[in-house]
Length: 229
Image (cartoon, rainbow, N blue to C red; front, side):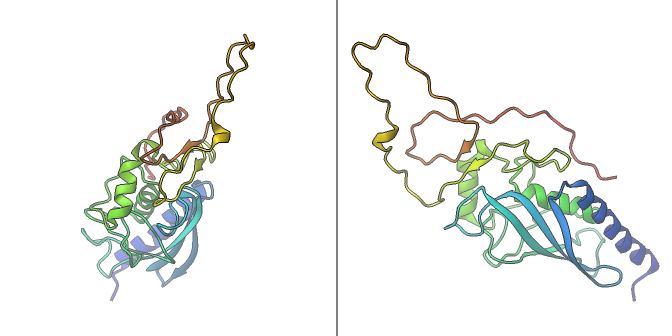
């Protein structure tokens, strides 16, 4: 039988998670709740995320939904919520089955756990999500570390503050540069100074054979880390 204290805690977790969704700028939404008090949720994340599979594009997935189930002994120490993707997911910290590898994650409150889950999904370099559950996705993350996170890890930052990403296929080989992209030969009588190419504000994931100049991230105003208290 559930104790009154645990009933109060689960109800408070639900209220806190609702507050988090309201403050997330549309990035997080509760789509269903099961139990009285709530014991299971379906939570939808919207933002710049990895594609659902290795064969798909990366950096432009807009939504992903997950079953989040609280174990019987939650919130006891070590009782971490169980997270399973609804549909395919290709991510360093998710197994092929869709199960999240939580590693040494500690669930203090449900909304802080869901905030951590968002930061994990956008590959925030400051978040340690345990060992790699998908070695291929982990190798991709390491190779593209300079372009991460995919989206802002701070849910209070307005949408659009992180540059868009131009996706490439994870397994695609670097294609030869088309002739049309080569500089046009200058006319011998042309004494004008060459016009420099405009720097693209968009970030592109680089293939191993890509020798083009790197595109730098647009500087962002730093914000304090999230504390939903």
